Image (cartoon, helix red, strand yellow):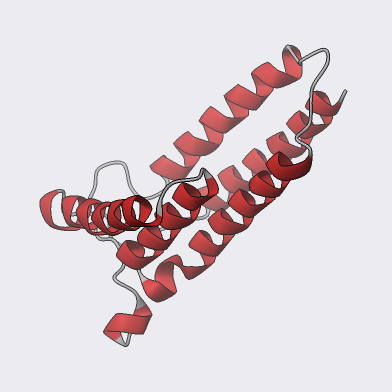
Length: 145
């Protein structure tokens, strides 16, 4: 039963994301599909996945307990912080922090997750911003905007 409850709640979330994505209206578009395509695609993929869970739930779901529940909650908080800080501190720094947080959560060493975080933050930003010409924010904190 808990799988179905989760599915209904998550379907409502997907509907909210799709509604918000549909409201996106760029006064100019430099891409043929526009800025709302990616969030709509994600909302649709999540809705399909959770729809499958609604139809075929686990008969004996096992919810996380103890340390695993704490890790799941910490992961949720880390993603929420990432979303909230993304524009303010910028993509490279927010991604580096997020990578370090997730890496440490899964018992990665400080040196490895720090190097991975910095490399991923800068590397992905460079790839999208400079090579693909998809602008990602550097952050108001650094640019003064």
